[in-house]
Image (cartoon, rainbow, N blue to C red; front, top):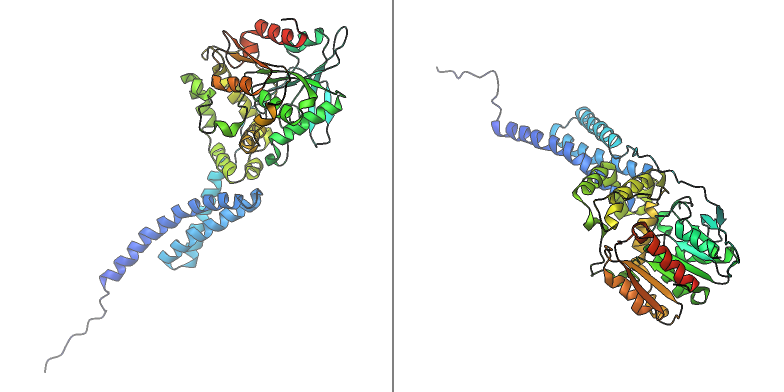
Length: 421
């Protein structure tokens, strides 16, 4: 009689074991990689609904736990292992974010060279710093208001032209526009609009008790002066527009406006690239697209404005006829980056001021440097739209005429305003 020997064990199929190993090899790395990506995506998506950083972080952490935990559990089927791997990924991701995205910039803020004459608390809600050069001799009835460029890049004290006009009988006011210099910043950066800047200027006119004013606007300040003239044509006696920015931004969306960044030298480009090579700045940029309020919550004015100041100091020489040469006597006032970005963006939404400007007979002098990086058609448009405008080109000067040709600039401005060229 024949007997069959029974094996003491049962053979285990090979294919299911290989499949389990394959799942482990694939799913665990997938969870480790997918978790941080999902966290970043949730952070940005949540920013479209709320600017509060704690809520953004909570959404990011929840997305990381789910996106990492599910693949890991699918691979090992053990809660303890899943929890340990997910916790480790969360800790490493949080530490990396803390050392990069949430590490504040360490850039010293510039110190203005002079104190303001005072502050205006306006009915618009703006608190604006200003300087005043009192008229000498017989005062003229119409004060001068100086509008700086940028938006958001003020000077830091009376310049030679302001002193020259005061010597000729003008009260000369120069103020830091909302969100820049020594003036207040908004807690909600979306409040920086062209309309708000025009309203502030009208409130300033009322505050100083002037029936009408003379406006001196440079770059963006020229755009602001034109917007104010269109809204209040009976409140302006004369205007000087220096190196004007675009008259109406939507008309230039598909045209070459001219950009200072195209004039940078290789050394300036390297300096700016080094300044911008930051994970924090990259995250801030993405948040600006999602909601500027969330970007502002992540990187506040006190931190970002000094970075903007350093960037402007690097790029400023490119606004002259000689981009490679250092530029002396740059303003040391603190610029406002959110005011710059949001006001510029709002320019694309404002109504066309040109129909109203074509009906205004106010005398206007337009000054443009011969090597200004701005398209010369911009200055010509002001001349063509404003019925009583004169365009003058200044040789040997770029966008910053008063820095390169100070004597020519001073004579042109004072001669036009006093009627003695």
